[in-house]
Amino acid sequence: MTLYTFRVNRSAFPLNIEWYAYLCSNPIFMQRLLHLLCLLCPCLLNAQPLIEREFGGPGYQRGEESILLSDGGYAVAASGNDSTTGFLDAMIIRLDSNANELWSKQYGGFSSDFTSSIAPTADGGFVVAATTYSFSSDPGTTSDWWLLRLNDQGDTLWTRTFPKPGNDRMYDIHVNRDGSLLLTGWISISGYARGTIMKVSEQGDSLWSFSLGSSGNSFAQFSSELSDGRYVMAGARLFGNWQAWVGLFDTSGNLLNSYSYETPVTNSYAQRIFEHPNGGYLLGGRSGTSLNMAPFIARLNDQFDTLWTRNYRNTVDINTQEDDFPITMTAEGGAAFGGGRLVAGLPVGSIYKTDTSGNVLWVRDFPDPYDKKFIDAFTAPNGDFVFTGYARGFSNVSCEAYLVRCDTSGSTGTNTAVTELETPRVLVYPNPVRDEVVYLQAPSPAPRTVQLLDAAGRIVLTHAWTTESLALSLSSLSAGWYIVEIREGDHMQRERILR
Image (cartoon, rainbow, N blue to C red):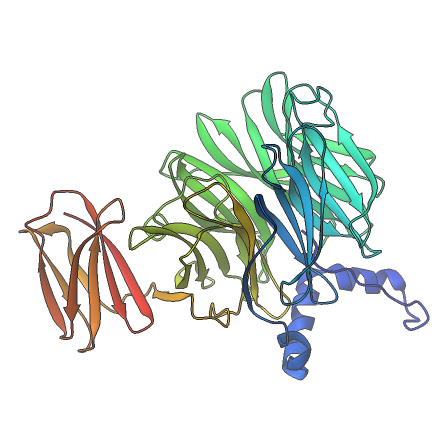
C-alpha cells in the first residue's frame, strides 16, 4: 500500500532527476527524512487530529483499507449496501482530516462486488483492488479480480477484469515507483486456489504473473516493491497444514528466494512483510485454528533466515475472522497490530504495540457500544497508527466503517481506550493453580479491582484489593481456563490461568 506520491520540479532540482525519484521512493531514506522533519518542524507532522469515529449510511459498510492523502484527509475502501439488498457493492468513502465524510460512491452490478485495497495515483486519483461477481466471466456465479481506476472525485476512469474459471479474489494493490501496479490475491487453477502476484501497467495490462504451488491450495495477501526495485509477497500454502509463505522476486517476476513459517499450532498465514530499518524484514501474520486464531510476528534477515518469532496466543483472547489482525511496522522497527477479545464478557476491538524485540508494550481496548473489528493498519509519517475496520451493533447485521488514529502511546484524544500493561506489575501464581488457591503479589499497596472471568468471558468473581498480596480461593469454580483481570486506575493487567 503506497501512502504518498512525490512530484519533483525539474527546474528546481538541476541534478539527476532519477536520483531524486529514487530517494523519494526509498523507505529508509524517507523514514530518516521524516524523523529529521519531526525534530526541526514538529508542527508540520504532528498537527494531524487523533480520531476514533464511525461513518457510513444505513445498512452495512465494512471498512477494508484506508490511505492518508496529501491534504491530511483519508480515502477508505469499503464494502457495503444500503440495506435494501443483500448484495455488496464496492465503495470509496472520502474523509477530511477529522474523518468527516466528504463524499462516498458505490461501484457494482446486480450481484456482490467488494473492495480489498486502495492506493493513490500520481494525478491525485486512486486505484482500487476489488472482487466482482457482477462482471465476472460467469456473472453471478463465479468471481474475478476487478481493478478500478478512479479520479480524485471517485469517478470511474476505467476498469479491468482478469477472467479465470472458478472463484478468484484480489486482496491487495501497490503502486510501484514507475507507475506500474502489483496485484495480489488468489486465482483458481485446475480446481485449486493459487496465491498469485501480478504486475500490470498503469493501464491495467498484464506484464507478468506468478502463482504459488503446483498442487494444493495457496493464497497471497500482500505484495510491495522494495527499495532496490525487487518485489516481495506474503501469503500461505497448504502443505499438510497451512504454512506462512514469503517470496522474493526480481523485476521480471522470477522467484529468487522463499521462506516458509510453521508454528506449533495448526495453521499459519503471512499477512504483511516490511523492510526493516535495521536490514532484513519484519513479517506479520496469524496462526491457529479457524475458531482460535492469534497474531504472530517474525524478524527475518535479508536471506529470510529467522532471527526470532513471537506468538501472541495468550495476549489476544478471541478471533474467528480471517483478517482481524492487521499489522503495521512502527518507526523504530517494532509492530502495532489489531485484534479482538472479550473484556467483561463483551467483544471489543484492541490495538497492541510491541518493541523491536516483539514484546508487547501496551494494549488499547475500544469497547461499547459496538462490536468493533480492525481490518487494516498503517503507520503515518509522524509515527501515529491508523486502523480501519467496522463497528457493528449487537442486535442486528448493520455496521458502519470505523477509523482510529492513535498516537504512539495509543491515545485517540478520547477516554474510550483502556491501557493494558503487558509487563506485569502483579505476579499471579501458581499456574496451573494448586490447592484451589491463586495468589497475587504486587510491588506496593494500591487500590485495585480484581475480576475473574471464565472461558466465555463471564465475570465469576469480583474483589476489591488494596494490600500488597491477595489469596483468592477458587474452590467454588469448576476446572478449566480463567482470566484474572487486575485494574489499577486506568491500567489493566490480564493473566490466563488454569484451575
